[in-house]
Length: 98
Image (cartoon, rainbow, N blue to C red):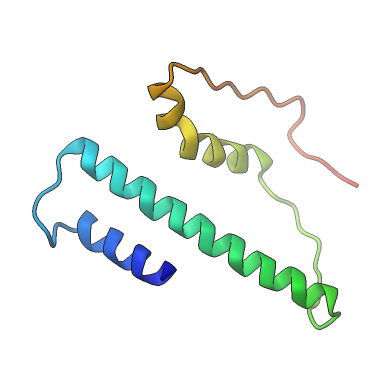
């Protein structure tokens, strides 16, 4: 079902059912982005199950934390705007370590 959601969202975005106005295009992009995130979460859950069963190698890596936060904010910004909420990001440092 998730692949169907992603596929149909892509078809709508590409205009298979007719031209979309700006708001519709934005909504379809939100659907697509959310479905992609859900797919990533499912894949991560499967990876965690493999890690737990010790059948999956684990590698430590550095991430661009600011970019991760910006993407997360981008996914909820339209809902926050509709509700009159303001989202701010204040990072104290560029990286984290263990």
